[in-house]
Image (cartoon, rainbow, N blue to C red; front, side, top):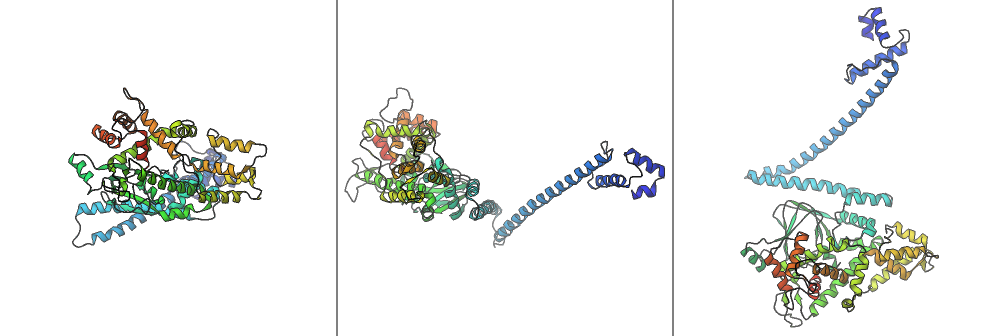
Length: 542
């Protein structure tokens, strides 16, 4: 406006203001127009074909200019912060890598490149994990918000762990338990082809593949591995991906890292990988907290079941030596009884096939609980029963009941059951047997739950279904595999081959026939239910 005053005539100034719809005598409107042109220049919008033609449009444009400039400044600041943070991380990594450059004599370029790739991988992974641990360690959040944070940060890292699987009815508690384990965990980094554990090392906790891949190999110095190499076969049993775990059974006292598969094998880094480790002692300490009672109960039951299975195997007339314990196939030095062992590869693939049948087929059935109940009430199953709850479990159930029975009247009313659900025990699905029982109890006129009913409900929440029933269900699924001229009565090579094709388990015909021949106790050409269950008892504890 100063320029207009100094470098234009009175008539030019009047025509200019008139074109903008401004009264030359109205000083406020005049300066508003000038302010509009100033902001147009400052934000580099330009005057173009579209521009304000009156005061109202000028005010709107000024507001739009200021808002746009503010948003743009915020975005630039955020981008600058992100770039700065990245540059800071890069500087830290470069400083860390400088130590390798100072070696004399210096390393060759290919080796330096491999080192740089591994260090960059481990550095970035570690930064994220440290941030997640810091978030989970914060105190003061309300329980519902803490659960939300745990679900996001934990991100199902431990969802495939045996003692945490199939706990959908208490998903919140599982997430909080996983978050506690993540806080206690440490992360180990391994470069490609490095040995993580060999078969002789004792399991001391849970390992979960966080990123990268880990492969299971037949023991390098074993006769079985030599035989596989002689036949030009791979000694790799399986490749574990992020989320897969090993050492799950260490909480049961199992000394084998591959105890969930019933074998002892070497663990090798297939690619650069990060593995999260939680010690068995830390898991025990976390499960001792009251809110994790269902998980503690599940672990105790599995520990009891493991001891019972091992006793049954050792006393069986057709005893198979436990391959994972490396017992020589000679004589039992305790019972002086002859026995034979299954090959590590056979036990592993029986376990892999059984778990995939359970996860991909049996668990997908409608009315699963009723189906499993029928497995135990059938004529052939009447002689085998699952163990009842232990004295310790009974005591814990009683203590939990007393805690929720706040008025000490010997039963829980609707208000006290609501407190139980507030801990994260999701209202069970009415489509299940125990879910209907739960809703029926609350729908009664009195609406109360006594100790016996509470015990039954907690058993359902914990997911303590019969393992014998699950093993039988897996056998029936394999036995019923549709093959030409197939009949029920045992798992034949044809049935196993057909099942492997559907489960993405890659074995050639010779390997499948070897598995059947080893497990065929009566030489009938098929694996009987008894033999199949005996194999599964080497590892099926949950």
